[in-house]
Length: 251
Ligand code: PEP
Image (tube, helix red, strand yellow):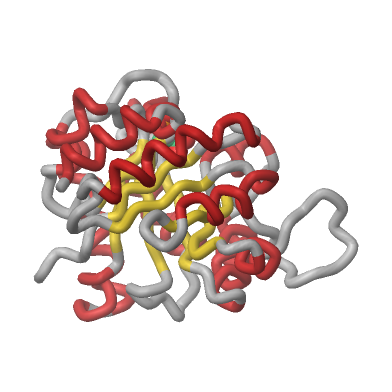
């Protein structure tokens, strides 16, 4: 199976204002000098600066949303539709991040509806799955991921429109990461689960990202694991130098 083109994605979460745009200018400059060679690059800033971020990054570094509503429009105060994200230049949207699942009670079926909304707006959906520490300690990791994948992914998955991000909840923002063997086991499991449901041709092209405390010092090791097709980077994506160093580690 040929490996899909890796994707390095930054998730800024609820961080960043217009004053943060120089970080993006620095990323854009590094990319012009070849930092992203052979990679797809993505930054998901807060929605408030999505348009300005897109204007600054142009086409070399895509921008994306961190969430979208499952409906196309309507009476949903404070929410943002996938079409609205696309309208200001987004090409991707993260759905089912564990912080959304925990803070907003998002179930697998809501995540699945959001994936369909993203596709309808022409966006690539990055679907997050991951186990809690208690679930890992109980030996339930693969069962939990199997349920999340079954419930969160619609039947119409295509490689060009779907990315899966494995983000162990206990590794997010903690500085802790799974062992390389644990990452390999989970990513192999995710690939095999995709193959069983969607067939080799589709499943082989779906990018499976690792996320959770990726930083310049561990990026090469994590990104070198079989079936790891890139990274979803939180904290370390806020500093251009760190994000670029992670890109260089994979390139
Ligand atoms: C994330 O929340 O998507 C994430 C991976 O965060 P961090 O890199 O900060 O652990």
